[in-house]
Length: 109
Image (cartoon, rainbow, N blue to C red):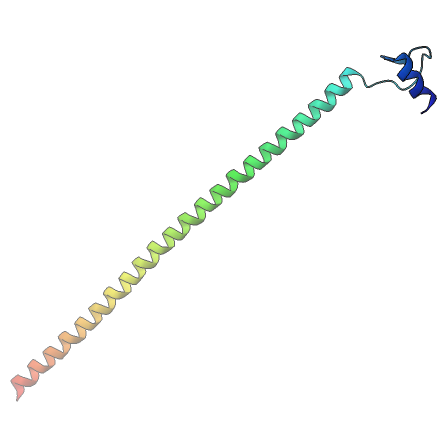
C-alpha cells in the first residue's frame, strides 16, 4: 500500500484532503458527479428516442410496401380483366363475322 492509502485507511478521508496530511487526491465534486449522471441520462434518452424513431420509420416503410403490393395486385387484376374482355370482344366479333359470311353464303347458293 502507498503511504496515502495507509493514511486514508487509518485516519479516513475528508472532502478535499486526507486527515493529518492536508493534501492528496480529492474526491470528485458533487457537481461533477451530477454532470456525469446527467450526461449518461441524456445519452440514454437519446438512444431510446433514436431506437423508437427507427422502429416507427421501419413500420411506416413496411405499411407503405404492403399498400404498394396491394395496389399492384389490384392494378394487375384490372389490367388482366381489361385484356380478357378485349380478347372476348375480338373473339365475338370474329364469330359474328363468320356467321354473317355463312349467312351470305347460304343466300348466294
